Image (cartoon, rainbow, N blue to C red; front, side, top):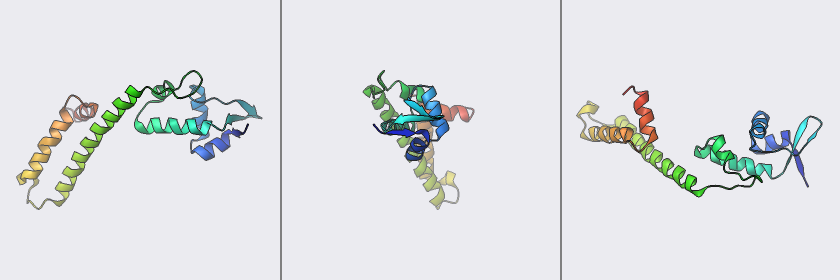
Length: 148
């Protein structure tokens, strides 16, 4: 069986050694031995690190990711959580598209004043609805950041 030391794992995965030590500390990964002072890992740790990075990129916390692995360390991913996260990402994508379109229109609008432009006024109204709707945590955060 091939073992990788912490430096090799860091180099191959792009995850810094400090993060690898932290992941081990919180139980996300497990070293199998030491060679001197250097932790040794099974080669399949690289796949697990890829799954962890995917989870982080999707917006899951490390605690949530840890809960997606069974006692044996194998993935045991609750599909309902994935569907909920996909739905949240879809809402965020819609919000971002609307914001992108509004910014592009503002940049390219030929009206002497943006407030005189009917398209801009519609975009403002749509943006306000998206930002303040209760179904999205994004809107609540934006509203609270604006002091509304």
